[in-house]
Image (tube, rainbow, N blue to C red; front, side):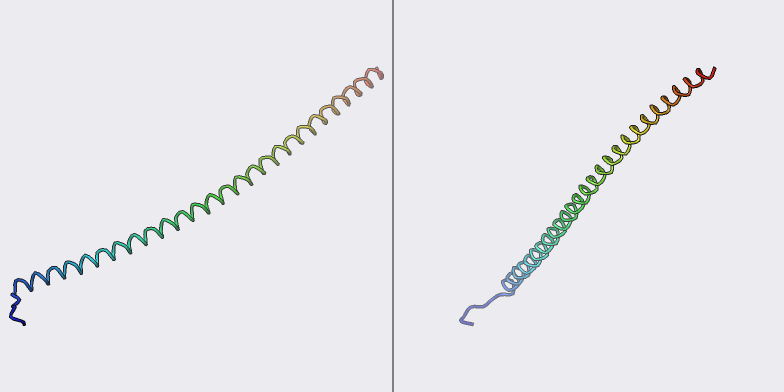
Length: 103
């Protein structure tokens, strides 16, 4: 070997550096896979939140429309009740007049 000898200590040191480099590379690869997986999960969660928000907005619009319809029906019922009260009142007045006339 060109007159140079590699001692056992030097060979162990080189092997140790190589092993440390391999483990460091493995750790970086696993770390990057974990970060990628986490980013995908966060993106999926955000998409679900957007869907829920859209669904909530649609339900809110439906609820507002139902409330408006209920208020319209309530207003119609009040108007009909008022007309009925006026009719009954005028009918009572007519019956009272007839009773007076009969007496």
